[in-house]
Image 1 (cartoon, one colour):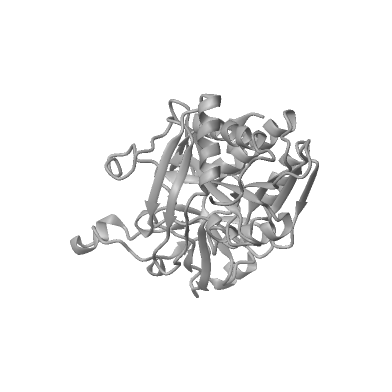
Image 2 (tube, rainbow, N blue to C red; image 1 turned 135 degrees about the horizontal axis):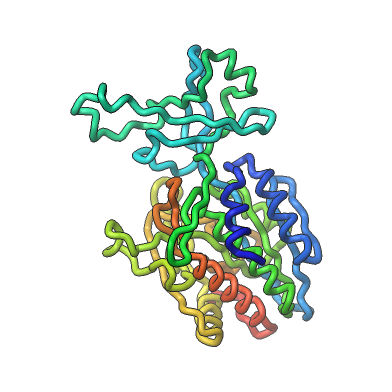
Length: 362
């Protein structure tokens, strides 16, 4: 597997929440040579099974969400401009002057821009104001609403940051949807690793939908897989920038992360505390494989692990991932070495699951 090319391919594939089909089929195609069975369930989750060499062992699920945040067209103006609402956690202060991709009802993507007010005509009191997304308009170059409708664009059509990918210095990449295509690339690397060196337990590698919308896609996948334990792969907030240097401890290039506390706390009163035996396995594997391991804990964050852990009689869950800078913007940054180390660590953990592994929390 060429990690750079896989990540590039995934980051340039548009897949907003609810419209993940392009990414789902792409991930399924990548997994088919590596898994014994690959299916796409009713809601769009991609589920690949790697059969273990043993029997009577816990069933494991390693998963990463395949969707990305964006917008939904709310209104088409008579003069051809589009109004939108958020689809996921969009940071409004980065929006003016962005290039966008608007999906028509037939699946075609069209270029648009959030056009800011001309600088020369902006009064002083507006120069430092953050405009709400509901006050911005997308310009696709149409003369009127009829032209927009002829393209198949109506209220309800999704919009995303125009996909981009660029290599930076020192093993870093920047672009759109590093969250969570970085984890999707790592997921393929996990499957490749386990395909070459089979674990004793059955491992399901899963790409989940709807994470940026309502975090519920992973729940539906769990109802198919019925895992005893699960490892969630997603971004953590890198603290090696000036604005976050005193808030967290993780940094790009310093290895994969284990997330030891997450709690949304803003309406969605849910989060995840680590399953201690899984955390112990993570630490032991990192030490034995000589993989550096970073720890991360944050308030105001939630992942789809928070709901998956409540399925069945309760699933043993550990949140893991890789540091990323500038999350939820069009210029997210990650380090390729962290993705490679993350995949090696997770694969190593899966190969250490045996009949003695403790599924209970204590």
